[in-house]
Length: 202
Image 1 (cartoon, rainbow, N blue to C red):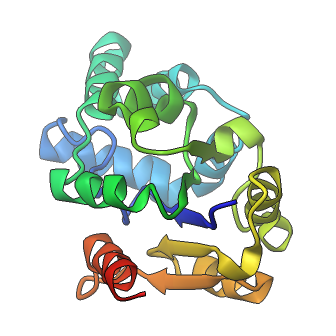
Image 2: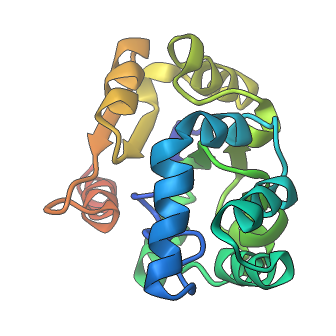
């Protein structure tokens, strides 16, 4: 079986944010209320305790914006997140060498709106979202990684994670795999190019 190549989403494959189409003042209110003052709710949302509708309704009440307007912006922003076309081409070239898995700590909106709108199932062999599995990828020392590798018949020592989280990269290495940290200097495309270079030199 092919080794598994795990790709993170937020901050690695895509850099867009929820509610980015709101006017700046309302964007700040959303960010402060949800991602600073109530981060535990965000964690619970990503683990399946809330739906996107419930979160948007809470926000509409807290920041004083009509729910329908807020919901429309949220859904549209989820559907129009951007990924560089060159990155997707790199992934296509690597598919013959790797079982490519998108692994993300994310919300129900990811599977409902982002995945179908961007056609991500066409680019990844499997998608593992924390909302669906009710656990973060780093929980229980990377149990989600281990299970995905086992289910795919891969070996951990041949598998790779590309992620912008230092913690995720360290946990993956502790499992026995290899990891590449995405930084402003070394993007996902940079690391994919290294893998493609290995393809032609091996």
